Figure 1: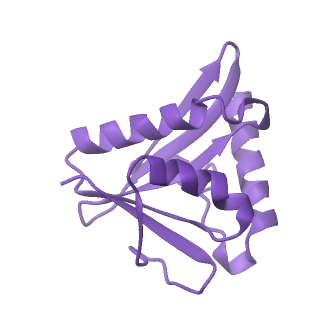
Figure 2 (figure 1 turned 60 degrees about the horizontal axis):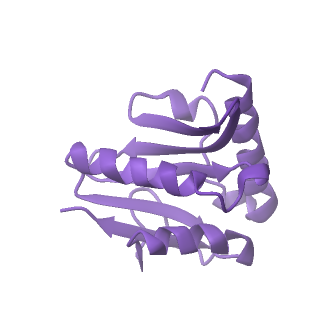
Length: 145
């Protein structure tokens, strides 16, 4: 996360979340939030360029959350996000996580991400952890038990 390209992609992610979400529904982690011990961050690279980023946040109840998934616009639909998500799922399983969850938006701009999550077995469900359902968010869950 210390590299300039990774920080730039995370800044793009945050800007996108603020542009596409109501202010009280932006739950993206900033750089500080991504450096806490409960969070592991991965990047996918295409040669010297970062193609995608994603993170896994361990929650106190034995579950975990997918965070900060973003593909650089130059690498959309080339498999980088799939590779990150597959890594997150594999690591969560290896760590004994019983359920993997995420919060995302409900606007059409979130559709490709939701399609990716559904392709990996995530299903729509209730709010989890500290989230509340205010009508904008969608919550997806993958049972790993």
